[in-house]
Image 1 (tube, one colour):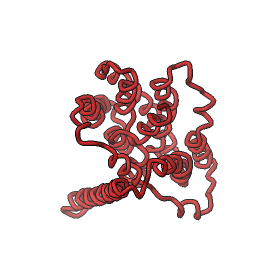
Image 2 (image 1 turned 90 degrees about the vertical axis):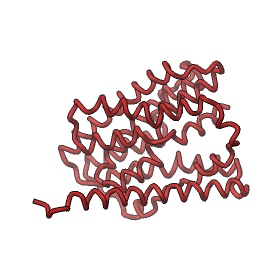
Image 3 (image 1 turned 180 degrees about the horizontal axis):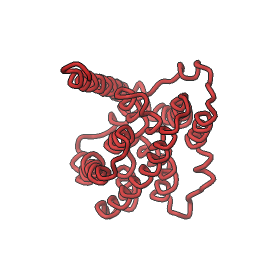
Image 4 (image 1 turned 180 degrees about the vertical axis):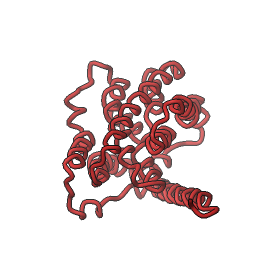
Length: 275
């Protein structure tokens, strides 16, 4: 039996760890905000950072988190998490279509995209790492579902279904990295440690995006409807739907936390990409 107060002490330690990680993220976002306001990071620079995040940092992270021994339970839970994440995104799509009814087609597409897809990578990963690094493999499963849906359904929101390309989705560096990482995991291959030592997360981009927002724009009710869906309604729905399934606590917690993340930076990237 753990010593008296051991469980409470562990919870407090975990809470402080997560709180510290969230504070670090906000400090990095704040730094990006200041740099954007001072025009030290320009729009062109932010686009370059977006490309760095999407095509270099994220794929490397996806490979590194698979550097762990192959265990049957973990292998099984990975597929459970992936399937559940696909179902979660399906529910998000349905709810966003029912609730978001903006008259402008492009605004409607952007708000639906923002409600459906959370920042499960660049904000989700640090939070999961702060709570329990062993959960990261389930975070990757969630991210794989996110990538598959965002580069098919997500793209169709902006460009129409006729422009969805299965080839482009499968050749996305993040999708390739996820499958490569999973192969490394199944084959018990250990990559050089230098790869994991060169990992870093860049939150300056989010702060730079925020610096371009005018306060008058926040009066738009659609922003608040989308934020309420993303941060409150959809996570609560997931909480209710997952409770009866009695999933592994690590899988359940990871799915819930990543669903409760704010809108993904991919929302801004896709909006810029498709004009």
